[in-house]
Image (cartoon, rainbow, N blue to C red; front, side, top):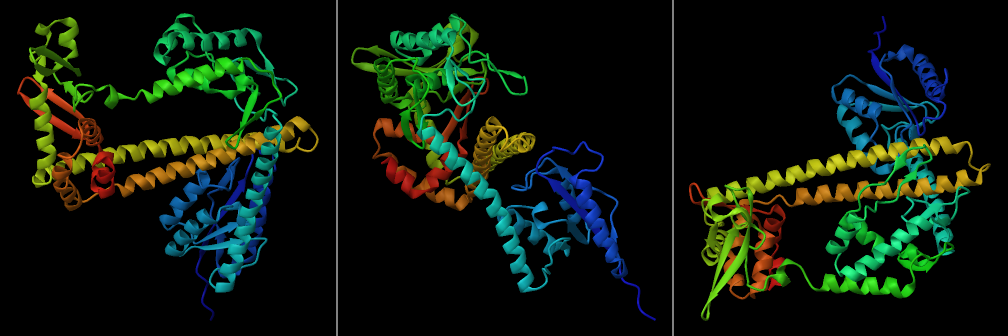
Length: 515
């Protein structure tokens, strides 16, 4: 008697890049599943059977793996609930070689096979794996070549000075017919007022105060989905972007170049260049280290734990001697009786912090505690970056759905074709953003250091320290130290270190550059 075949549990995975048509009674996901079920039924004599769970991703791109049904499928594979994945075509599973390589590693580790209904290959042989990689290469090539053509077309349009889309800026409206910008006279008057205000006030901070007093807001506009955006209060970053935007000169940026645009200018060349020179001069005047004329090592780092506020640097002069202090801001503004320790001698506090940095490599328990705090800080940054990655992935899915809505109009409606190109460019930008986030996460993991490494770096701190100028010393301390907190109740001082500073201290070339 022949032995009954063992059961092969088959999970059918289906995917569609857009959500167009998914509301129909019988859509492309149903068609993919029907073909896969028929294939599984043809292998019934070998013990194949379909799992009841549906793994359908409608409206999700194959360029990444941020898909809910796919994630659920991989979780079930890790749990040992699946023996075989069945797809209509291999590009339904993924269109990225890098992602697919990771998927295959997981499948091989879990002993799960992969079957494509319309493509014959066997991953157990070298020729089958080669065939699979060729299919995936063409799937990725197809996705990338469309993006490249779109980018080339948009670049050519921008070189001719054409508006290729994006969020409208204050002072201009987008032509309802598309393809160009029209001056909004009321907003243009506001933009000219912003430029004049900055030239009169001389700094972003003072100009921002005037702008807010006048009640000027950011550009308010309605999206294609009739959703109102913008109209919020202008902040310092937005103000700086307005002052640096070459659109107001009637020009457009294209791959690092500035070319003449088709839209009219709002700001004349002379006013724009005067603003740029003022901005550059303000940047060149330096930051905290240049303004730190008294050589305060801990300026901006010291905090009063009792009052929960910062302690600013002050000095008094008696004869030829200067006495420096760190003064609690609460005591300074509301009276010294409000703080149990309104001031600290600056020299003694700075010497204490420097001595603690020197002693860090000799105190193993302290070294371990410092490293643990730094690693926890790095982990928090990783979590934040992953949240940003998830948000970017969700935006990509939203763009994919918009592309799907435009797909049927491409070739017929010229505006739809232009809009599709703009969306493709945004999609590529999001892909680059996700890659940058992944690189940052990898960089944070690389900053994990060992106590012995840090101890050796701190030992090299002492001879280097004595050769630095006061400004260089302040920069190095700010690189290493996050905050210095004084507790007046028990007269204690706690020092928090930057995780990035600890990693930089370990790199010998960083210290060499500082010197």
